Image (cartoon, rainbow, N blue to C red; front, side, top):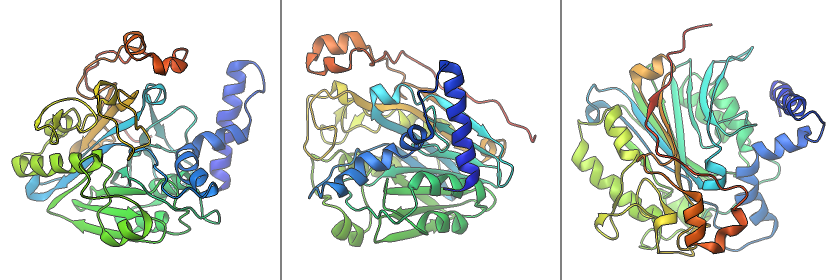
Length: 370
């Protein structure tokens, strides 16, 4: 890990201990927190030689540009799918001005030096987000941690190619994603599908890329996942159908308001009805009676879904601004007590599970040069 990131982690560690009035937290704790996404779903299955690991399916996202948007410029949005007990705490927006590299604005969990669910803007004009690759398998212990590569990429890259190079070089396979990248200087967007053995970089100045945890390229699917693109039990496949339908409807109409609406969309293409649940872009697994063994969150009425969302466009990103919302992007509340009363099998979370009250989207302040 670069010395500058180590210093940042040391600073966070010291700050936590000062607040607690003890020395119970050490640097290893903060490194573990930052690497939790790639450790639990990627390293541990590799270590245990699991045949069919199922890392969590995080997120729905879109990037659009050219004739697909109302002004011909970039629009990007992302919602974070997490277990509620974690996602309710994914509530920080970091504004980092490093001694070297570019200024960065990103959402994050407490203790992170990276975004984690990955919605970032840098002062060189890059906008980045991602969705995870379902049913991925592979890890290289000699590679560089994903959180280090992701932070380095957004801090130092000034172009899509530079950003992709930071992510591909010394890749450890952890937290394998379909990355969506926009360059505000050129209006170009790109998708980097990054496995361990395979990676594919596509780009356009007139089109869309969208994600819902489905891998795109057949070679990666066959060599690095046990994903079934034809399964109707797979949330990723159903949400992909919804994205396809929305793109047919919204060509030339995509703006920041449309992007926010996509993040709160409830139409279920499996049921062909409005139904907030496992198969909607705005995930509400706690409200869905359908379970599946093809996701980590496999139980019916599971305590997970979309816990927050972000959206930006070219004009906002130029001012390092974004729209954001905590809780379900649709604005519907989640009440922990009533959920646990109806589903006592999840009572083990009663001391930690919080309400997600009804919220509204808010616009972050414009950030001027410092």
